[in-house]
Image (cartoon, rainbow, N blue to C red; front, side, top):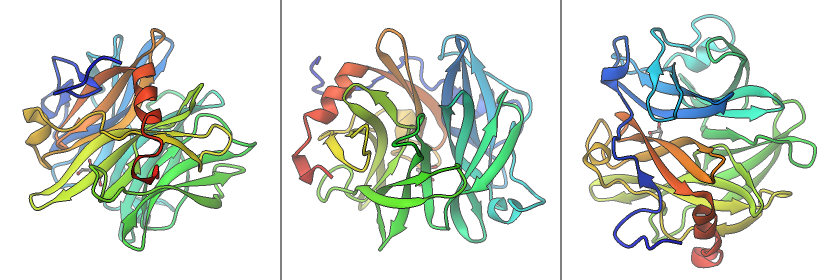
Length: 316
Ligand code: BMA
């Protein structure tokens, strides 16, 4: 692994940010927390856009190289105003996570309404038309990420319920993507570490020979407010509630001005990653809730970073 003294394991692209509010072809406050997939050699990214009134919706960005994106002229998915989803989405839809599962594109996202945050699931064939499937959690849950394969014959997801005031990551299973249960604890904030206040799943889990690689976010609360960082954890392939290893140090911390300053400063927050054929991983992240950036790292280095920390801080 190359030395990481004075720098992060994930290397920022020198021309970050890759998408800002200036690139959005309609009125908005900010753009952040985009989720990518690569299909037929092209990159598609669903972006969280915050409207001027403060509610979020989604827009589509497309690219040939994963670095330079074109944004569709109209939003691709907006909160429902009629029907069963309307009361859950009256204050917006946030933080999409795209998963390719059984050849279909699924979007787990956070619906925000008068009951607070719930996790919802939709699917798309073309990234432009979306069919809602179900709300899949009770209020008080967010950061839902769907596994790209069944685990033990069932669909699986990670999520982040707030239980007892603590934001920990949990695992649930489903036979049909609608009914979820068999929930199990996976990992919690680590006292006195960079992820001591909250943790949550960020990218949909990535299958590797070492297990399920999960790129997560960890929050430290300080007297100047929260600091959001990106970390990695390895979960067992057959039983993802079992933690194999967890990074000691974050893989990416807010350091650049565009990560330090914005609507919410000191935030790097990933919603997806692409593993390229050459073993490089592109991690897409929102910076300061104000723009979208990309950082890269070698898959082997990321795996090594979480395996070396298997016993630190109790592991989980
Ligand atoms: C989290 C989510 C993210 C956001 C982050 C930092 O709770 O709401 O959408 O990027 O906070 O503000």
